[in-house]
Each structure stands twice: as C-alpha cells, then as structure tokens.
Length: 186
Image 1: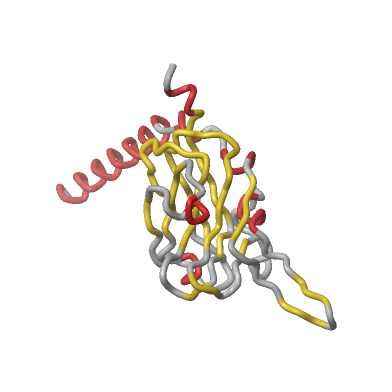
Image 2: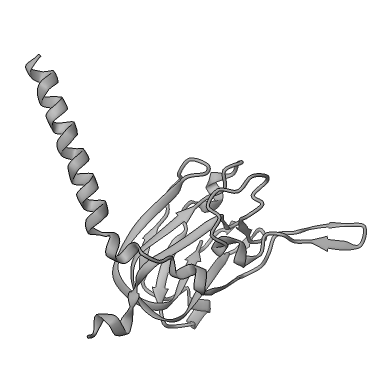
C-alpha cells in the first residue's frame, strides 16, 4: 500500500513537472518558422511511366504543415537514392533556433529518416551541410516525431543531411521554432 501511494504521488509530480515544462517552454514554440520558408533538396524521388516522369515528393512537402498524411508518403519529401542526400530550409532571415521537430513517414521505411544530421547556420558552403550540428536522428518508429533542442543556435538555414552513405532521405514534416535574432539582442 505504501509503495502504491508513493508511486501515485510520483506520477502526479511528474505530470505537474511535464505540464510546467511544456508551459514554460511555450514562448519559443508559438510559431512554426518553417511554414514561412522555402525548401530545396539534392534530388527528388520519382518514377517514369509512358514517357512522363512523376514526382510528388519535392522538398516543400516537408514544410506543408501536414505531419501525418494518409497514403504512401503523400505529404513527404523524398530524395533519390544517392550519396550524401540533403534537404535545406531557408528561413529567409536569421533566427535563434530553440527546437527542430522531424516527422518520418507512417507507412514504411523509418530508416530513411535515421542518422540524419540537423545542421543550422548562415553558410551555404557545401550546400549548407558544413554548418554547426544541432543533433542526429536515430531510428524511430514509423510515423513518429522527434524533437531536438538546439539551444538557440543562430541561423538562416536548417539542413537535414545524411553524410557518407548512399540513401534516400525522407522527411514528412520539419518544424522549426525559435525567435528572430534581432529580438534576442534587444
């Protein structure tokens, strides 16, 4: 009985701490900055049929505001199978980035969003892939979202990059939260 009561108290405490953490960090999570940006990627997956090439997995699919879309990755960006695939978001201005959230496809292939380096900065050297690293994704269940705290890294560009291997890079949604760099200096 004592153990059960203590577990209930701890569960309540963790619930309160979780609510406090979410509310306390909401200042940086007001607006998904990615929705105002533009995106490009190293290549785009497509297929050919009867002399026409179909490609519905362009870079902008990862910033369309749809985390979970029905169908075969219908709202995801997918690069071709290539060495060092990358995807880049241009926020059109420099921001202090607090969090980046990456969502992978729900229908299959979670490995296409694994081992992705998240890079943030103002340089376009090597297509932006040489900017400082915020984090690296790990293999997560299909359809899940993973959040990375970037601690206020400064940058205009947010890159997703899989270095040194041949792979597809699939991103079903990329969300970026932070503040304008000018606001931080006031």
